[in-house]
Length: 373
Image (spheres, rainbow, N blue to C red):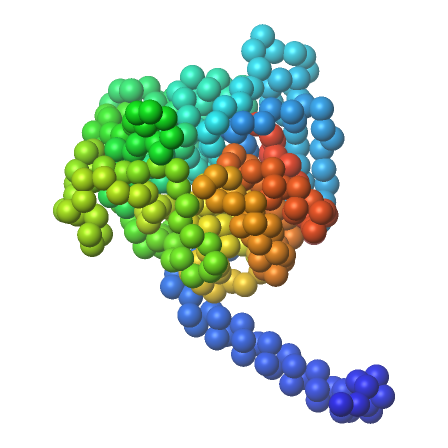
């Protein structure tokens, strides 16, 4: 094949036009397979309300292409003028507030509720987040470290008439969970639908991709289409807490079985000029599977950021963590923001392979995604 630089200008123009045509066709083909018409937003800010790491006050703010990061300072919200009488608290849980803007429209979605009511209430207050201004919530899956703090928003009994839409991915979110470690293994709790309703939530079970609060979308059920397996250190008990008739297949007849995360969701946004921001929360179905599902649902190939827990700890292996880094490098997101249950093997390998892409989050950090003017 001749060197392109040696071709006449007219020939180069024809080739360029052909390549552009092929690219446009590929984009149209991808869009044609999209299962949801996802909205495009102008900006997105993710505030880390609950996570395990609280080292943020000692790190500088960042101004990067397509992303700024403002760290919590003085133990409280960014730019607080003096030390506060209490500080942001970390725990083994996850909660992220997503604030999106499209023209003059602002929407706020709370993704998960962390492990405990006390920590979530403390951090919401210190970060200046008013629960009454939240438009919707998404629960990624039915594990205690993601739903435990829900009563921090409106108390166990909400004021009369208050109903916050809460999207859940499937009936099995409400099944009782049991840990795989311990003798005997401890019960991890049951998400109580009636208690959620009493606490002011309008529970909506949606297993298919769904638009949330006009700006966000969920992946719906995440297929296992990569090397990743559903590796979850819990079992669930159909019929305890959940309605077994609404479970899928053989799960209806089981009394206890391996937790495969079938109901787990990722929450996503499409930011103009940047691409997808995928909040994977816990990635029990695999972070690669989660990202690919977001791409398939939206018809958008470009991934700007992958955020959340990637669960590359037991029962997954170090080899799986390293392979995940390699697969994620092929997807080539602009930024990787590992949280919660990701694990140090993945983080170390990602820093080695893609050092400019990895940004460490801490409780109180705010990540804003917007294209440069």
